[in-house]
Structures are given as structure tokens and as C-alpha cells.
Length: 257
Ligand code: ADP
Image (cartoon, rainbow, N blue to C red; front, top):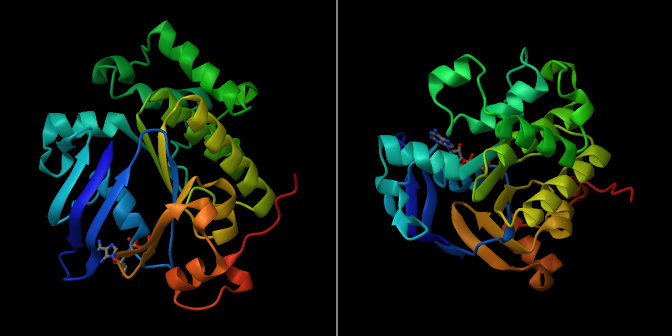
């Protein structure tokens, strides 16, 4: 479904962030990308919605090379590929519901959306997705009145309301405490399973990666140094990815369930 073919990315300053990446990601997989800070995780994930554009190779989504996409095709791509950010990216002064409805912007005309004229089905879908992440009672509250964990749930409800095929999540729990991080990851995994979405998540903590991933991709210095199912991951795998033995700091710990 998603295929990287000899993908490389050199930033304008000459930094070689991705080096000849070859990967195939299947429909419905929940993939976690791990690696040290600077390994290229964000660059890899952001290539898939063209927030960054690789400078070599092909990146195929449903057999189309998205690296050649412009304008209309690019807008369609960003509707098909949703994103969850570390910092939630909500419009703080708007209600939770309006933030979730923003997931429909790729489908609703600009004028209609400015006027807040969303079809009834969209409203229902937005409310339903808030319910799925357990915060429907917050629908009419301003987004910035919510806790970090609740804000990230709003952003998950927003991405679901976008009805994407692929969800990208760039360090989605890096700003949250350990118990909240686990709860948010559980929600993300559950809803992505329920909707059969392909999900690609960057995570800093290796114990979290092991707990939630079906498959782990290890990146080091812009190269894939491990790619396999969670059963194949050993302590040595992480040494290979991190280039050193695992330390306490690499673990989040604290799943309280
Ligand atoms: P990670 O997500 O694993 O921390 P990134 O993909 O953010 O890694 O970055 C990989 C490397 O590319 C880092 O060395 C980073 O400094 C560099 N980099 C990221 N974005 C840019 C940019 N826009 N211009 C130049 N270098 C960049």
C-alpha cells in the first residue's frame, strides 16, 4: 500500500537525513518507528504527507508516486493521510467540536467551513469520534481548557473525522505524563484497528514501541537498521538502533493497567 523505493532526502543545508530507504508498509499495519533524536524519524514520517519532500527515489501510495504530486493531488494526499502532532495543533480558542470538524475541511468547501456550515452527517461523525475517545462531554468547551491528554484525544477525533487511509503520528505522547501516554496510545491503537487504518507512529521510548507496535522500524543516521515484527525484537535490536546499550532514559515505564 505504501512503498519507499530508494528514497533519500538531502535538506537544502546539505544534511543527508534519509539514505536510500526501502520499505513496504501494508494496509492496516500499526508501525512504530524508533531511533535516537536526529535519526530521521520525523523526516521519514513527514515525507508521507509531503510536509517534506525527498530529493531522490519514489514514494508510492496506492501505486502512485506521491513525490510528483502538486496542488490538487497534494491536497487529496493530505486528506488521505492524516497527522497527529506532539503539540496537538488545535485551534485553542475554538470549541472541541469545531476543532474535530476541521477534519472535514478537505471535503467541505472553504466558504461553507468559514461559515461553520457543516452537513449534519459531519456533525454526527465528529460527535461519534469524540465519544470513541471518551470526551464527548467536552464538545462545547474551548480546546485550551482541556488537559494535554484530552487535547491529544481531540486531535485523534479530528484525524478520524478526516476519514484518512493513513494516520501519521509524530511523537504523539512526548508531552504527556506516563499514565496519560499509555492511555492515549491505547486509544490510538484501538481506533486505528477499528477503522482498519494504516498507522505510522514515531516514538522515543522503546518500551512503548514494544507494547503498541505490530512492527518496528529502527532508524539510525537516516538508514533503516531494523525492520521486523515485534516478536523479533530483542535487547540487541535496540543496541543496534541506538548504537549503545539501553539506558533508563530510553524507557517510559509506568503502564498502570
Ligand atoms: P528525528 O525525528 O529522528 O529526531 P529528524 O527527521 O527531525 O530526526 O532530523 C534528522 C536530521 O535532519 C537531524 O540531524 C536534523 O537536524 C536534520 N534536519 C531536520 N529538519 C531539517 C531542515 N529543515 N533542514 C536541515 N536539517 C534538518
